[in-house]
Length: 117
Length: 111
Image (cartoon, rainbow over all chains, first blue to last red; front, top):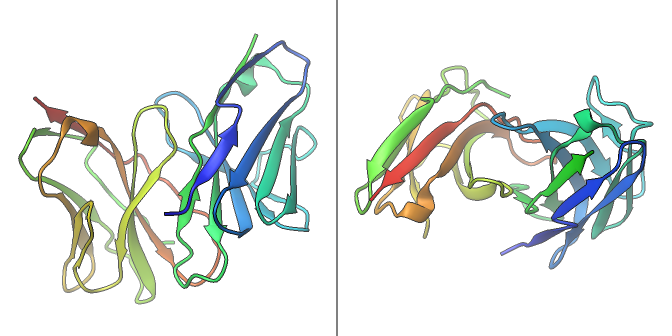
């Protein structure tokens, strides 16, 4: 089946620094990748939709200058949390949609646990 | 995408069938029913999806009522590793759209 990886799986950073999270589709090409955020005991909330070669579309309330998304190839999207604050501590999950399939199932990465101290 | 309603939590004995219900009374004719699950601190995992007919794969069976207003996900022989939050999602297929997650059902499989 389709595999999506994320790196790192866990990161701790100091307040004010930036953190980059990578999302890769390992065995398929993904024209669209999605970034979700999940706070403890809550459901996943969509942050942005990333299409290869174009600018990401952000959900209402998500600061595009704070959460920089780059989708430079059909297998890689990155999320950079700039000037991180403790309230950005969360579980970040990406998903990818496979090119050319009729149903566009989304395959999820294992998630990245970000802790900002 | 149509809204779904699921019970907050369910328990199931190990080895027994787990039946997880989902109501989607406002589903439209072109919307599919998808099921995903999320084991603690992991990314969601696709389970199964269907439009009208019942579906079965190696993980589960999906039973959709004739009026399509509700469905049931069946895990035929639940194991402890099936303990997870199960999400029922209704969405259109054929286009790359995000998944809208509700609160899901926390299934706990008991030994």
